[in-house]
Length: 580
Image (cartoon, rainbow, N blue to C red; front, side, top):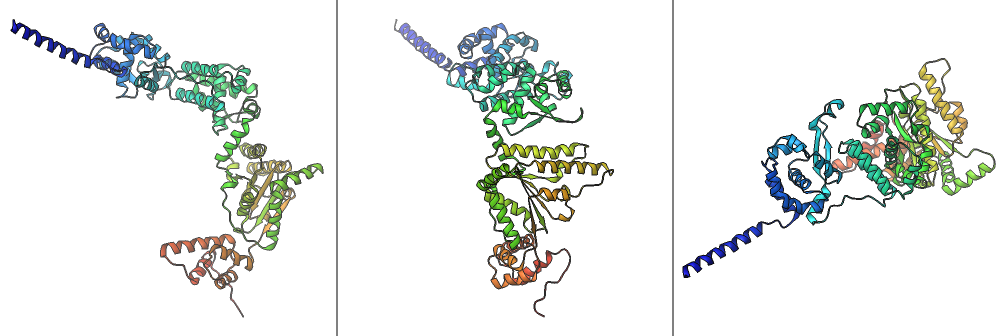
């Protein structure tokens, strides 16, 4: 009797221990349910027996994902494999579970539903094969788990796809850009992108930008192009290559060619409604597409100035006045007097008064100045210092970039310079300076008619500049070393003409003293009197002086400085002799 009780007692204890062990193995979190499903799936053959064994786990996951049990099982296996590979193919799944790909494809509707719920994402692999072949290959499809699902599972919260509503125009365009990027990278099909764009617009239908877009009543294809261009505009890119934007959005080659032809033939509704412009060119060349000024005004209204200022700050051809370093400049009396007068005229308060009076008296309101003379005399730096003192930005014109090998293109480039400058003036509180630096090649004498096509092109460019200077509504400064070659028609259009001479002895004294402050007045006077150097040449010597000091830990003596002065001359020459 006692023995039986002892056996019963021992069995009872073992049963309790077994129950506790089993209890400890029960999943405590959603992640553990996922793990059990994924681990059991390995070499399972994805059989009905396997599915039945993990249904309790799948049932725990399904409500959090908003899907059924089978879809939960598929998700769990993909989730597990996603840690080893960024994108999972049907073949990867089949190999893991030791079954045929066809048996997995029988659940294609469940895969599609998971994609629709945004629990997983579909990726179309670009394996380098031609588009016509690539789009029809079965092995192209890959899947990966949405990162936000992991966050929901970890926190045991019901997964709700992010709803992007109540956005401002910036947030909306950024969200649209993400969709275009995903489409371009083949993370979304065209249909999926279309659905998401329409949902995004619907969720933000109260936004003024969206209301204006809807007023245009565009077909979907053109709507997407316009939205893409709108983002580019706010992201500092005024234009995009037509081919690039079409390829990014539309997957089918036939569709791409059809849309491209519509634009080139001028039959696309975006062209016909004056919403976009297409640059001139031939069919084979890359051609840029951009929003028209009218459509920018319509779509962005008062925000247009914000975007324009943002663009100006990032442009390589614009020097902001705040970025210009202050420098002391020394000139002979005539240049100094003329520059002071010009600077005073360009202070915003004075400039506005002068323009108003000119307008009232029927005079032209544009200010054009020519700085001419020897090299190294401070012409360009003077423009920078005037801009610094008057708070004006500088739009630099790179002469070489206004000339093209293609017939007719150079004229368009120079016209674009003035069009761009006009926009800057319109969108700036203080009008910037349009600087043609070293303008010898573009302001030179016009060629006789009947000469080469190059001469005809140069004449055409100069005629454009002459007309633009006539209509100028801002400030233009040109610098040149070769004033003798300047066309007479340009001379009349420059309101100010300032000649920069080589510095006098007194002027050179101040330049030497400013550049190398450690020199004694006696040595400075000696250098100023003996060497006929420009300010730019003295600046070169000062830089070499500093390099010598850094490398040898001592200042060069006067004889070394004099040697450096002689090296500034391209041809050997003697320094001026003192006395008789």
